[in-house]
Structures are given as structure tokens and as C-alpha cells.
Length: 384
Image (cartoon, rainbow, N blue to C red; front, side):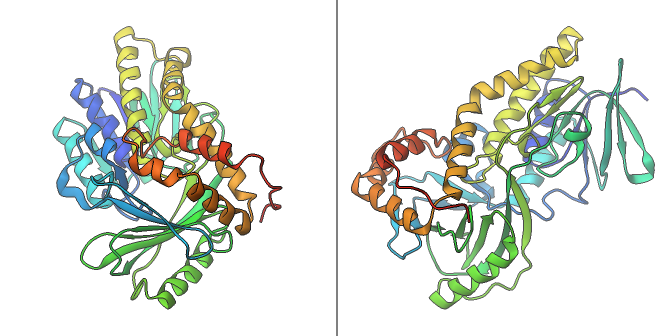
């Protein structure tokens, strides 16, 4: 059998977009996905910016609700509300997005096999071998893209290192009648992270949190608090679990292989959002592989341009976001209250609300402005 040009491992939005772009360029693409169908068991709120929706032409039928505003709560109930006249973000039907992008890639010519967990990727001089758990079947290709999401051992097996810094996440569907997103910053509620309650549609919403550890324990306490406050009516569904990388892989390329999306650590350390950054990197990866095919050179040296390009696009955001997240983990609730007070006093909320060039997906400017407004810092608490 003729080897594939590229095997994409993972059929999430990032993997399917990479497969779509390569298939559109005329390459023979196979996508291998361990889940039985696209969109199964997802722990992702699915909030995307207008910039992301427009850039990647996300089908408007996938949008559950558009957001004009959000409330941000410190440990007290004195929230900061941000509002804009036009929507800046939307929550999408996340499982439907996976299905939609997979179908789009298939229409472009990509082949898919579900229920196929990849156990190894072995680059060789002339070919690359991908082994799946099912009957130890082996597929051959000239190149591969690892888009498995965070937690896969494949990058480490390829000698690309391991992401050691991450937050654990958990989320559950709830019945609620709130009409705008709510975000909670409280070290007792979600140590090192934050919690959220966001409306979706028809009296439904998603409640969840990111924390350094025991996210499920903190979620139960959070749901009890929301119920006591009357913000949710019930939470009958089973939670979904996941994790968010806080730093990128040391290296995201090797001979014949690129790593994209959360598998590469290309997610926002501030919010945990990984779809937009992952799609941007999938676009870069497809372009780099296209040039490699034109030259017939699939060496690590040739493919290293991928890391150069995505770092140029995202490196500043990921670095500032990571160190901001690390700093936040040292802060006491008292200091978080102080931050909200300073933000209100200095009009940072008004700046975000009125500035048309203040982007939803690029947080370094806001983080640096917050840092300058808070200097000199009071001595932070010890890590919780």
C-alpha cells in the first residue's frame, strides 16, 4: 500500500484543521483518533473570540450564545463587570465543532479511522511508522502531526520533552438562569486557578474550574456554593475532566514529525483556552509541511522553522501568561481583592470595555498594565 503523505494523530479541532489544510493542498492524509467518534468526552467550555470565529470561518450554526459582557468576582461579591455593545466572544457546541471540522476535512479528501489509539511513532530514514493499539496495526507515512491534546506520551517518546506545569480542570452541565458569564478568582475556591459559570442556551450552563490539584473536590464545593446562592438549580450530569498545559514543549518538531495544539503546550496559560492558538499553529504546521514536501526534505533541521514561526506568533503571549499564572498562584485572597480594587480605581475595566483594539485572545498587554499599576507589589503570600 502506498504510504500516506501525512498521518494526523488526533481528530480534535486542531488535528482536523491541519488535515483539512493538507488535503486541500492535494496530499494524501489519514487521521487516527482514539475516541469512538468526534467530540466524545470533552472538558472544554468552548468559548471562542469573534477574531477566532471570523479567522477560521466557524459555522454560525455551532454558536450557542454570543457574549457582550462578563462578571469577574474576587473572593468577595464585589464584582467587576465588563461590557461591550457588540459581541466579543461566543460559546459554541464543542462536540459539534469537532464533528463539523472532521467532516470538512473528509470532504477535502482526508481519511479518518476512529477507535484507533496510537502507541508509537517511529521516524526512519525514508518513512515513518505509526502503530495503533488495535491488533498492533502499522501505518506508514512520510510525515506525521501529533495533535492528541495534552497528556499524550508520544512527544516524550519522540524525545521532545515533557510538559511538567499544568492545571487540572473539571466541568459539568448545570441548570441555571443567569444571562452572562461569571468568572471567580478565589484561592480557597480554585487554588492557583479560577472557576466559572457560563450560560449556554435554554436555561442550561457550564460550571467548572481549573486548580493545581483535586479539581473534582473543589468543584463539588463550588457547586454547593452556587446552589446556596441560587445561581444554579441543579447539576445532574456527570463531570468531564481534563488538564491545561501552562508551558510549551521544549521542542515541537523532530525528523518527519510536528506537534501542534495542547500536545505542544500551545494554550493560553491565563484562561486555559487552546482552540484558537491551536488552529493558528495547525495553519503554520500545514504550511511548513507543504514546503518540506516541495523540497523533499523532512529532517528536523528543515522542520525546525515550524517552531520559529509559531514562537514568533505566540511566544510572547505564552511566556508572559505563564509567569503571570505562576505569580497568581502565590497571591493571597487579600491581595486578589487589592488587585480588583486597583483595577477599578485605575479604570482598567473601562479601558478594556472602551478600547476597540483590546483583543480577547492576546493578554500580554493587559497583564503588563496590571503589573505596572500594582507596583510596588506588597509581599505575596506563600504558595497555597
